[in-house]
Image (cartoon, rainbow over all chains, first blue to last red; front, side, top):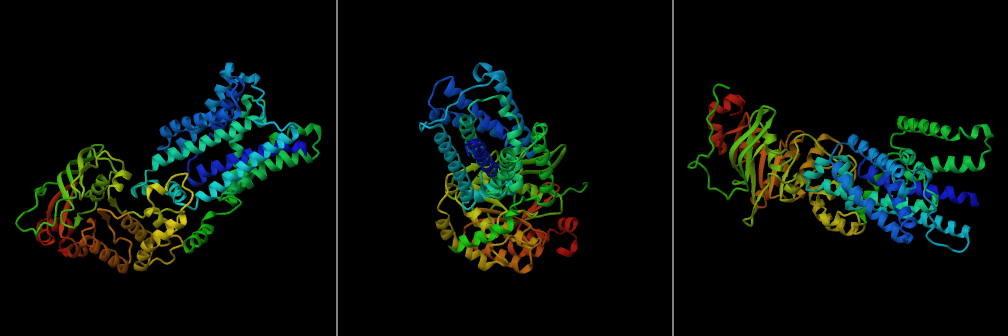
Length: 305
Length: 274
């Protein structure tokens, strides 16, 4: 059981990032391919503030969140009136810059040697109980984000951001300041990615630049596409099927011959790629299906209430 | 064109019916050029003086572009568009963002069908009605109260117009076109620009739309500018008609006057229409 706490914490982190990407891409249509840039910025800022500046974890996390949000606001202001391809490339480039900084600014980040150790923000005396409690916190945050995404899709703000995704000029012609809304929403959701990254710092404990590689972005994207980008629980099911299946079931419970164990990460990526292709070919709206037909009865219910 | 019609910048004063009011919009030296091509060139144009006004002219005359220059969906190359509010205030629309213009009450329906694919008809109407204070990322509650407040308004439109299933998506082209106009009306504009409202709409729905537009205009709630190729509708509905050709407003006046201007009408519309 103890061996499960770390992968389950990682799973909770992926679900959190997936819920945020669902808000950005599934609801508002912002193609953020730099998820790890924002979570990584939050992660390193938190760690640097805790380790180098000796600030308490909570304060470090708040500062990291705010700084990530401001950086995202500036980036969003520059790129969010461009087309989707440009947003994709710009966010990917941003994540690459963050990764690069983590290797070059080694006085702050420890460079490739790494930065550690980030302690858990609280201590219950017993290490196992503490990590378990921290997992509980992560699960609660993941649940809160999923609930937020669910609730926001049912209120005027949710209709607004969906309308921006569907037809931005039309939304603007109805008096909606779409660009401002996109920048604010992007900044807030990226800031929360920073928060999640900061929380992840305490899960990882020892930070190396490798954590900021695009793998995380890809895993979150694959999870979301697999589950269904327009579904609130899409990221959750997608994460279960990817991270859950491989990092937990296969790594913990399947006996893999030693000579194949090195191949496992490659096989995993291959399987992700295959599944992604199959999903896009046969279930383009994801395994949870297309949100369109199911949304209408929900709206009817709300209207009669 | 060799026989370019003489421009009548000022409307013929004597023959006009009683002027119903001050203009809502004044365009001054508004031009739009794409590359070397001037698609709109309007030295001076007053809109909204007469309640319902028509904007006619051959395809490619620049009618839709002129409307988009007013709503700032397209930025003018030169010139200013000034909005005169009912309280006497004046605001320059040129330079504003398109959404700010819509919030000023200057709203345009679309000629080409536009819709939100993920919103049902009712959701689309709620979107048009939602005030900005409800549209904040932390405003998670109050949906029921908002739907209750909006119910009466939405129901009047649903009763009046023929939507098959308000909680489904707009299916036919006609439904989408109708929804587009209804969204505009829900915004309670002070100046409504209708770009070919009858194209793609069944006759019965067209009649209902025009009836509502006439009611609102007669009540002094808004002024309207209509682009329409159905000239009977223009002659019947409009108190004043602007005739555009090759990017210029070449003739203005009452429907009778414009119809009577036979050479011009023949030149662009063919004799059968007049």
